[in-house]
Image 1 (cartoon, helix red, strand yellow):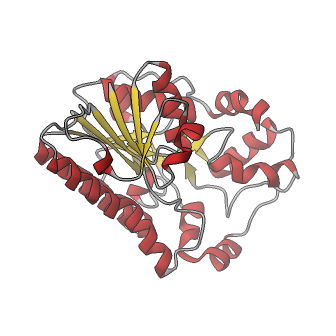
Image 2: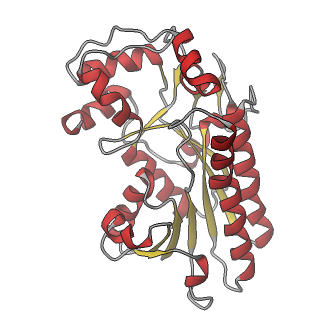
Length: 301
């Protein structure tokens, strides 16, 4: 199978490439740094700077669209919002225009999204049937991203939307930002610690994307998070235990709001999301509970 990836040099993309290379698939990554793709994604993965470098007569079986500037790296100034929008919606529009120009099109487009689509859900249990609870900037960004990707249905392409939670990995992502303060004994809950955290182990994230790729009936949104979300205070306690460090120093909500502005909603809000459609489709999670997931990763943190 020939698979084209955007965002292939990111955390999830790198793991996907290694997984699919081992299965013998042919991989192409659309990247601003195509010369670095083989080193980051695996020997044999082709990097291209422009979609037009892919010959029109070269068969393409699937597209996995994960591109997007990190949403939590910088406060949401006007220029940062524009960058976040362009790196997701504008790039996806470019991808769809290119697909529309091809006579031979892929069978499936798997497009990234996030559980932030729902906004801060409070205590509500959120499945894929739930509407957005509160449309903050992160929610609006995900809604627009999904709506753009869904236009591929008109091109005869099966569209799958992956609403990812907090990805737990030893080589990047959410845990890499928490590693130092927790190892120094400075970790703890954020705000009151009651907000829900939908999480997923990187191995399950990769496996479920492959499952949705192979599952020909799969389409529409899927919550990519473990069946058992946890509250922030319980997550902090579990991470401290995994790293053999105390995790009792809370970060006041007022401090986060003062320093991060609207972006603090990513830390002080949450989603009690469940992967109802994945479970109904027959996907079996390797890591159902947080303790086993962190235990698997702790030796590499």
